[in-house]
Image (tube, rainbow over all chains, first blue to last red; front, side, top):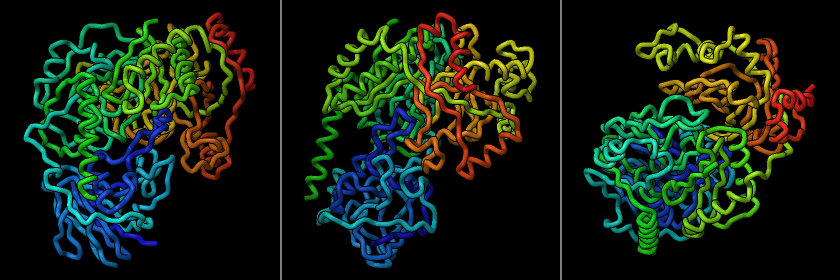
Length: 324
Length: 298
């Protein structure tokens, strides 16, 4: 068996796969890589199954030492990997020699880099997934983010690494103002016309409170509410509802203040009204937004959401095929 | 009761089963639909989540088209109205140390998040959560408030927020429901196993973490145990299910400490009894019916 040791962990590095499903009714969120496309492409580069566990490094990279020779690839946020101090290409399968140290430059673009290792990070499956659920203390490595000194097992490689690099046209690009598409609904009927208009006219900025639980957006105008009777049990504040389930990617605004879009480790339910939900492919993209990224929300109908979903799936397929 | 259907993006479908919020009737409807959906094993439905007066599914639109998902859910609406109102369930006695030192220390650290220090508040700026809840609900003393909180049993009406956390709805008429506003600014910390209350709902915070419910006390009884050490976690890491009935029993600080020690040693047990529950019989005479079902714990 091969292992790697964490020399420095970055600020929030987690073992993730594509997520844990079927337990949301117990309060256990899906988890999994936030930017699923980059995660899958990293796995494809090293010849892994798309769901093999890898590392998600947020905002600041980790530094790792490999016990034996290993094949790795990094995708997602723009960073330059270094093996024993030598700069190497990203989006490419790389050989790390036995005892080799793998580190990365600071991220130039994007918020999350994905490291795939041939054979996958071989932590135990918990409820069908290797993703970390830190609040519940399960999955990943000991149910928590990585710390210096951790030694993680690597599985036996099964596939063949790609000899190609991912074409530059497929690398992460971010516009000065990014657009996030949402489907309106849930409790949007609580908001005034003016607030709904503001939601789609204002330019928001990703706040520093942006992590695997949720993304908070600042610089928008405060939400105002129609004068409706509160449902029983909700509490008096118009931003409250009778506690209900939260769709992953839904937007709430406690007290009418800065909206929060729930991410893949978010609470599964609660008492805040929700006004819209990010379409699934844009939720994946949101995971690459770092604090201070400017954002505009756009309302779309279900047909447009489904078209975008299809286009996203085709893009992932094309990326993977391009590596064969 | 008019149902409201709404999509959450391209993969969730959210259904409010009641226009005016929480009621036992609404909860039974949502629970019955979710049970039926589970039995149907519809291909493409990936999550089925009953909630207090609503429910939600997650679906894969590549397998189950969204309009088809909507059609299936709507077809169940008629089917369950009036059905499933008698259930076989568990009655569980849970010890609670009310007004405990642990939540007290925590809540005093978050007074600036509380109603008692909101601009214009005339409340004592160091008021505790349980004192606030007492005043809001018109009880003469904290002791009387605790008595009302512990006397009537509670339905587990939803599991969520974090792993294994139960929402609780007290089995009393609407007019007698304890209601407290949630914190205006959520706390970033809550002791594990705090008994909370927000709106009309109680809860047991399954793990330490953020929260917005007022803090009433603490229980020694874990409700989430990923290691499944205690006997009552034999079947699942999550102890409680929607439909379980809980009876809080006040305990002293020394009893609480003894229970905590038993939890650490892995010997802690809970009194769990099987009981039928009939919505109609409860509605006819809630007080007598509660007394009747609580006999099982005697």
